[in-house]
Length: 187
Image 1 (cartoon, rainbow, N blue to C red):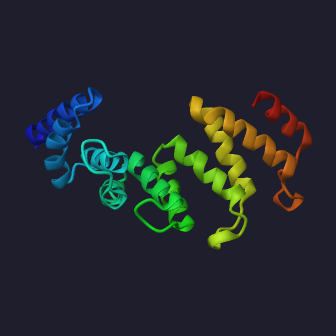
Image 2 (image 1 turned 30 degrees about the vertical axis):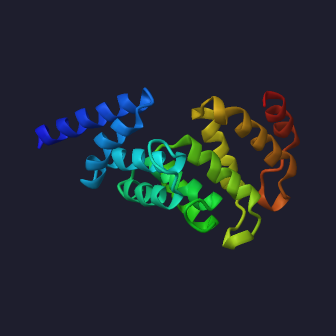
């Protein structure tokens, strides 16, 4: 099995090199057989290509197909992308509950972007689509994003955390004007 894994890895890397140089035809040629054999990274990569029309005709439904296959193997980037598909209605109907499900799975598998999106949904959906707001959990998630985040998520997470402390209803137990000021100033 080591030989097969190394072969998968080498072929995936050939596809990655091709995609990074803009040669999506070669990337597709390398990744499609791997994806069809169940390689989660290759499945995710095909999903990305279909979502963005890279080397193929843009097709959100086909992207969702590949994202789902990869996501079901616990590949966090695919879980995050599938969550985005449900959140934005790309290739599937908008379904905030399913979006949260996939964001939660991706967050549990280490996707800080999914953690950020999940926290935002917990404060913004406000009883829509059978989603109950949970500002306390959102507070915890935003703190995780601040601790482990990247440039894209750090400032928005700080701003959102400050907003939670400023606007939260007292029943959520997180209203705190001093912390609101602290995070707003840092944000």
